[in-house]
Length: 309
Image (cartoon, rainbow, N blue to C red; front, side, top):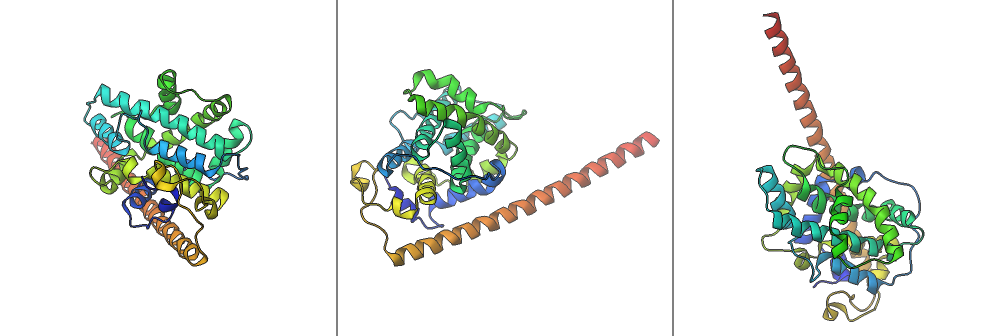
C-alpha cells in the first residue's frame, strides 16, 4: 500500500492522479463547495494518525464494495431502471463508514467546535477537493435515481441507515460528523446535476481491476490536504515504519531542497492542467446552454406556428 509521502509525489500522468483530476474536473470543487473565507486551525493529531485514517478511507477489512467501480455500476444500473439491493446496501454501508472516518480525520486535523472544524476543512482547496470526491462518487454517482433529482439529505440518510452497525465515534468526532453531513448533503446535491459527467470521468479514467486500496485515492487527497494545512515537510516527516507497517506510516526523512522544488513545480503544473480542464468544462457548459436555448426557441416557434395554423 502506497504511503502519503509517495502519493504526494505522484506524477500527473499516474492512474490515481488522472482519476482524481478527471472526477474533480467533472465536479469542480470550487463550484460544489464555493470558496469560504477564514483560517484553518490545526488540531492535535500527529501525521501517523492521519496516515492511518487516510488508509482506512481507502480500504478497511469491513468494506464490502469496490468504491468508484461500485458507484459507477450502481449509476449505470439506475439509468437502466434496474438495481441490485445487495450492491446498493454494500456501497451504502461503505459510504457511511467513510463518512465516519472522514469525521475522525477532520477532528484530528483541525481544532475548535465541530462546525469550526468542518469550516476549516472547506476553507482549504484540498479540503474542498476531498469533500467533493466523497460527495460526487460515494453519494451522487451511486445514489442518483433514473428520473428524479438526488435527495437533498443523501449523506444524512446514508449514515443514519447504517450508523448503528458501525464502530462508534467519540463525542468530539460525533460533533464533527453532525456538522459535516449537511455540507456533504449540499455537495452531493450540487454534484447530482452533473452525474453523467462524473460517470464519464470514472469510466474513462478508472483502470480496470483497480480499487481505492491499490490506487490510493483517499491517501492522495489526504496527502494534499496535510501538505496544504501543515506543509509538505509534515508529509515527509520521519515517523512510523512506512509502507512496511501496513501502509499507514510514512517514508523516513525530509525531502531535500532540490526535490521539494521539483515537487512544487509538478504540483503547479498539475494545478495549471486542472485550470485548463475547468476552462474546457465552462466552454462545454456554455455550448450546452446555447444549444438548449436554440432548441427551446425552435420548439416555441413550431408551437406558435401550429397554433396560428
